Image (cartoon, rainbow, N blue to C red; front, side):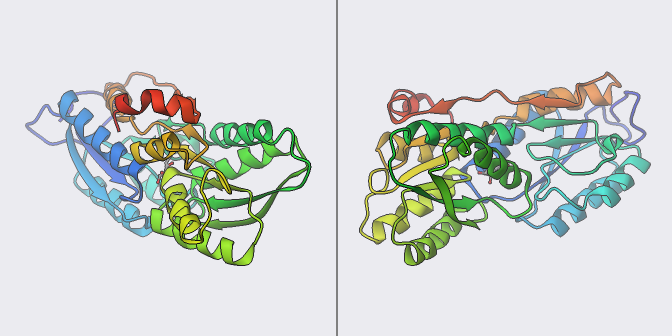
Length: 306
Ligand code: GYE
């Protein structure tokens, strides 16, 4: 077992910490990088990782968490696919005295004792950064700027928060108008499909705000298929800054990217060790992030780790 206080669970006869990690899925480049980061950091930290992929379904994640409870892991970490509906299973973990760490996405539970800490980005801030860029970009616009929004997974913290932040920021210029908004489920194919429908129904789209790079990359395909030039005829702003997104930004097909870091592994393992040792941890750990223009993307592209 872990030998620490704070947890009654553990594998008898082993000093290794066991972590059960319930991942969202493999929906995006961001997610792939995040999974790799968690797996590599666990190895480096000498933590035995049990990993599951929920394929973007909450019921699968709940099943995985229940199985980790049954296996008496030392700590459970997970990235909740949606915000709501976690109290029951989190109470089960609490009753079993297994600490839970939220990674990447938040839950909306009012009972803060159901988890030890939440490590991840400030998604409202990310949405604001995207909106603020657009306000600046459209300073001299004389006509209405028609925006279409491709949302992330419905009910997920990043979709809810990025929408909120973006809407808040674009209020600064009443010419900026969201004319359509739909979920692309954070996938490339979803982004493409939604954009195809948007293009059919709206002859005059100026800007795409996609909640992640993959959706933006799907939108690029749809825009090109419709005979328009992404980045010029229709401007695109996205969030994540994964390799494929940054490549499209360098090539002028995306106009601006707000960074969201998937490299949460090291911090997660560190927090897990502390929680198991009974040390106090901050209730919120926010990731540090930046933004990229096309010029900046060209400069850093070669050195991006994911
Ligand atoms: O932006 C998106 C992924 O939760 C921050 O999930 C994460 C988001 C990320 O599918 O690409």
